Image 1 (cartoon, helix red, strand yellow):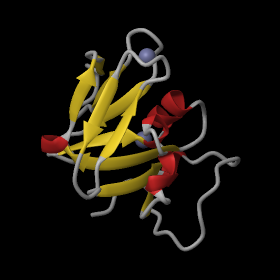
Image 2: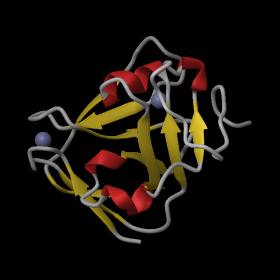
Image 3: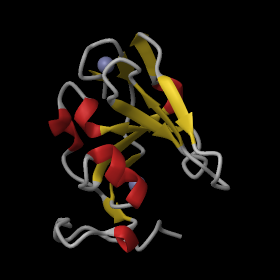
Image 4: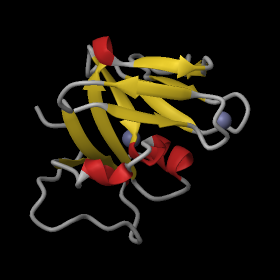
Length: 135
Ligand SMILES: [Zn+2]
Ligand SMILES: [Zn+2]
C-alpha cells in the first residue's frame, strides 16, 4: 500500500509504502494535547519505507521521561505528522489526519491507554482495549 500525506499548510509532504504494522486509537493524556482533546488515531508504517518528499520537520522529545517518543511536526503550521516510539522500533506512527486519504485507516485494531480516557471519549465496539499497551 502506498500512502501519501502532509501537513495542513503543505510545507511538509511525505510518502510511505507497505502494510501498516499498527492501527491504534490512543487515549493517553499526551495525545490529547496533540489531537485537540479526543483520542489520537495512529497508523504505524515501516520506518524504512517512510520519507519526507518536501520540507523537514521540527522535532520534540521530552527530557523528563525515561523512554520518550519523538514527535515530528510542521514548524510553519504546527501539524503533528508522526511520532517515533522506542516501544515500536522500526515504525513511524503517522497521525491519520495527515494522510491525503484518511479513510484508508479503516479504524483501530486496538485501543490503548484507556487509563487516561475522558468521559466524552468513544471506544468503538468490538475492538480490544488496553489500560496502557498490550503485553
Ligand atoms: Zn505545515
Ligand atoms: Zn497517546
